[in-house]
Length: 450
Ligand code: S3P
Image 1 (cartoon, protein in one colour):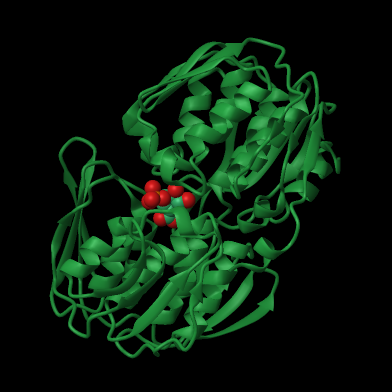
Image 2 (cartoon, rainbow, N blue to C red; image 1 turned 90 degrees about the vertical axis):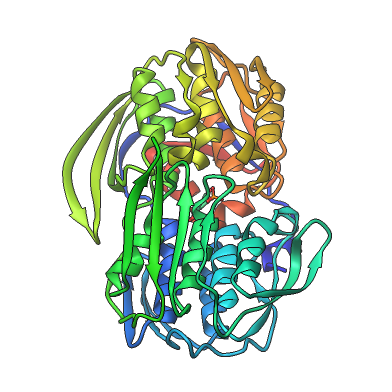
């Protein structure tokens, strides 16, 4: 279990703050950071990573790649070297691979183990133990892996034995999920043939891009209206390449929405990754009338990045189409906060996947809105927030259920609501954005320990 699970909950309160001002750079992208460690493990040679997110989630993946035979060295802040164990020659881990709170780390690494003749036990904290793993295990079993043990419902702790000769498969993912896609592609890297994943809605494409960056062969063709068909060629040598990790748009979302909601704010967020499969929140906020301007668009580490200037705005409610969900899947909690302050209703359609994130986010958002006086409804898998168009009451204490994004979202609410908002536990913020509190305070955000 993660060390944090052993310590006491640490509540935090946010109070109405003066206009936020200044410039900040969010930490490195979590998705790319996990993948940088994993590709470093599979490559021949030493991979140099800069801008790595040193959050708890990614550090657990770092420990797992060491258990499978990679050597890692921290050179400086966010600067790491990973010397690979190489595809096909991973070590049998001697201990349980503990992923703490990290679904991405656990699921991607199941793909790696599933494609090798090794056996590993996967586990994590109380949140990770609730998350469904059958969606990953099913395709891996088709590829020849064997699930030796699993907790009821296909959950962690589980023991997975991979195959020395993974069967090349063509697999249509049942939900748009980059984690399912990535697990299959990573297993396919060690298969003697071509492995294809078909997704009806395109999910984030960092794994495909990174396999190519390391010299692997991946082809991507459109599938239907919004989907893709991705094929990876197995047993292709992967060579170490430098990885520059851009700032995480999912972390940038918190100071961004805070600046929109706190009157008088003017904040610049620098170097934010603009990968189109990650920018659904920006699109939605612009539709809501947000004053966000993009500057200095440039390329960094194979991704477009930009500086975002954000000024306090009067937002209006919008309808968010379900097909936008994959490009903003982690941003619904903070969008719900923006929607609470907007004029009119915001309807977020097709949020079924939110029920299986670090917490049941649909339920956690709804309860959090309720205790802070925000009217809302859940209709099937849609969330409708009845925006106040001005004052939000606040004053509630929000249960975060070991979910970093629930914690940060409701703290942002408290910076702009009439009465303070308290979250029951801020420890999980360290999984994705360890510097959240300090960076927000630099902009003028006011937090207290209750
Ligand atoms: C991630 C994919 C998403 C996202 C998660 C990170 C990734 O999950 O919610 O935080 O890095 O591949 P799903 O692919 O299950 O939607």
